Length: 220
Image (cartoon, rainbow, N blue to C red; front, side, top):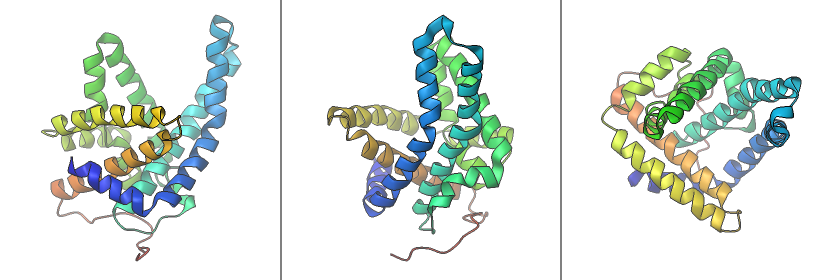
């Protein structure tokens, strides 16, 4: 798959910045993951306050941070200047819609997976580019979901194949004593950024390439 090759090349070019930014995001996510683990181990005895703090941190902090990391990969795919502060891009560019989209997608995909696994996976594919559209094009939550649905029309096969490859790549990373999972995730993040960039340019050739606040490429 060409996208995986281009994603690999992008990762190879910017591996150390990608690694550093990813580790920062993982560090910021620690409270959410830790509280979730505590809540899971407590079972039915989990305090309501702890559960609410865990979910609140996930929704209002961790999800926008994840979208900010998506913004970093996209800017790299466009050969634009990116920096550590970009991982907070969702907060300054489109925070409320970033939070709302994270909640709605989680609910819809969760319902799809509960009903049957296939509908849930289909929704994951159709909403593949919501995060990019929110942080890049500053679209509203519903508008981004509709646009992602449109962008993936006729491309579901490619995205399903990439999803299957993502599972295999992730498993391969885990087999390398778990150390390989971070490079695997970086590779996949770069690949999806390349796909979004390519599809958006194909579907909207009349639109400017970027709404980034910074147009200064590294020039390397």
